[in-house]
Image (cartoon, rainbow, N blue to C red):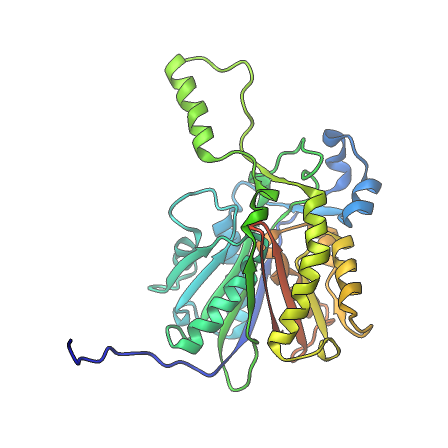
Length: 348
């Protein structure tokens, strides 16, 4: 056996979020504009979910362009140039291309020349997964500055006639720049998944089924009498609700223990913006002190933006002064997979 020793990297001991940025499409769609198609009411939607409106991206606003907008804002906030980024992570499940991934396109768009780039497909937990990867990469020495982006354009994958999901999802993007720190700014992360519940939140049809339909039309030259709808994101609402208010609330406590802090030490709690009843139930089960600021407002007027929801909510709280620089914030993502991830961070 050769005695040649392979070189290893050694990174920084601690990391932190250095900057935040977000992008919110200008077009606001209130519940009143979607209720007729699903035979519902604004009151019912708000009572069941807490959602009053969502943002609708234009045809020109894509996963890539929204990510780039959020990334530029985060870089400006961190005081860094795009060329100082070593790794770009884009958490999304609505990039409409099987390949190429969104991240290399975003890196090119913002001028992060030569940066490593790939997508993270962990749905609503994706941003928190990305933060964990960024923290590990910097401490391992494979990157110095990492751009973590959560972005979704659900309007491309939403069934406007599905009473279960038509009102749930919205469009938007947010980003964080992660870099070295003299003190711990990101705790150890807790990640997990349970594939037994994979189909509780899932694309309604896989791409091979779509191809089968297309090939049938090509071969016969005729449209079928009942053309199957384009795939959208479907959900078994009651099952997901039960899982979130029981299992995920327990996970939140485990994240705190992994971070080495107690609920009393927290200043801010930023859960995935899925449903106000889920958030309220989690807060109750966690026995959070009254002084802890809980993110809820983004759910009300942005709806569920999956991978973008945690960073969008965090950016908003800081902009409004409700989360202050140095505050301890528990970030918790959970959803399709079923997957979950969380960590405690210092607000930049």
